[in-house]
Length: 244
Ligand code: GLP
Image 1: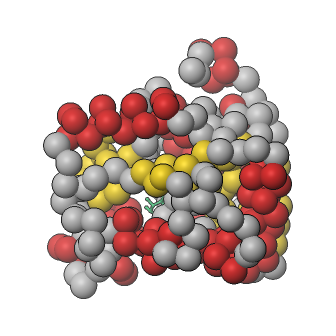
Image 2: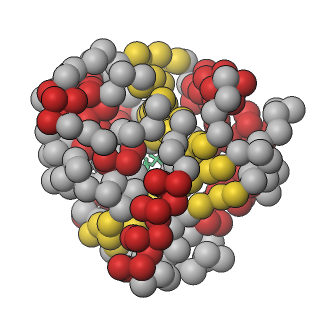
């Protein structure tokens, strides 16, 4: 559990600058392999375009993941599992259909708010995350923890910001179709993972990456909490690193 002391303690984040997202995927894959070989049992997984090259490496590898547990960060509220834009569908299409895990957990977008939050917190408690994969929003959100979310919050229902709805509308027919709420693992649970890999590519992430690494640790920049974690690797391309 995060204490006030831990929140004040700062660590250097390990930054790897790559030429493109394919190289980023290969670097991330090496770290995932190493963790799995060293006995990692529980992988925290993320959606979005940034982890896709990593999932491609995993799906094309010889590695068997069927003894592992996966826990995803988030899911849109209101979307059934089989909706084309649900994170259930995303994970199945990009990874699970090729590499089945022993058990996979993703919040149920149709679940009752209170019950679903309790269920997901119990899952995270039962299976402590060894390695957490992350992307980052243009406003520095991680999972769907938007700016202002308390660092100590656990799983909850988050109201998505206009910036996030704008960024994610490319996946939907129109902006009105983008869900306005999501269930998200809380920041407290994300930073309780033993090891974290965050990937970000493109100029539109440069500001968030700069604030996350060099700015103050503040709930207004959710990813800045990673400065308090002692094992974080940030994989970025030159464009995302351009404001460092
Ligand atoms: C969504 C997800 C985040 C992800 C972010 C960035 O909002 N909830 O987990 O990090 O998008 O996505 P992308 O990698 O496509 O830029």
